[in-house]
Amino acid sequence: MIALARAEAWKALELLPSEPMAHAVLGQIAAVHDYDWQEADEQFALARASESVSLSVHDMYAGCYLSPLGRFEEALQQTERVIAQDPLNMLCRGRQVRILILAEMYERAIVESQKSLEFDERHISAHSMIALAHFFQGKLPEAREWAEEAFRRTPLNSLAAGLLAGLLKQSGETEHAKKVLTTLRGMVSLGMIVYHVVCSEIDAAIDWYEQAIEQRHPYAAEWASGGFLRPLRSSPRWAKLAGMMNLPETG
Image (cartoon, rainbow, N blue to C red; front, side, top):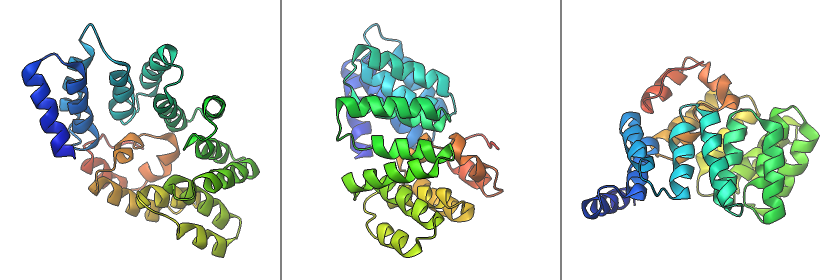
């Protein structure tokens, strides 16, 4: 699919060299798939140079370029611009909350997630984001409550399963945690990273993160500068992962 998207974007640019969305698609691929940040910067600059830039370009720029590089304030400015013009854009609202979590702005992440639920109570990630925000604030009962609700609503969601399993293991409910982990489908590495982060199992989390990078999961780059991954970045093993994504080594 990446090869097809890349080819179609270049075809669009042959017809209209200034087409913003085509440049944005190439920027997104360069960032979260190729880990070529210079190319991503150039493509997003071209995408944003047009007089007519779609909201999707701002959303992609925020999540695929600014967020991976830890430029969270700039990323939030981009998502706020989209939401101001399109309040019902749930994809961008979800993106905004993820960036808030990465930036350790947990109270605001909870507020914005609750707004998403007011618009759509079936929002796929809002409950998990609220649970994560509570967990990283040290509010374990609240995290457990929201994590259980997230898993009840989306039992096949990797993030929801990994988060709940981690909280269960932390509370000593090992067998229950194992049972929840057996439900993991799809992006298994995402769930397992969250599971091991919640359990403070740094080496295991790094093992799964490396797998996510190799598999080119977009969240591998998107999460790389997240505050809650500081323990991973403090590990001597992070240098290898940063190198795989061509990111600066950070602590």
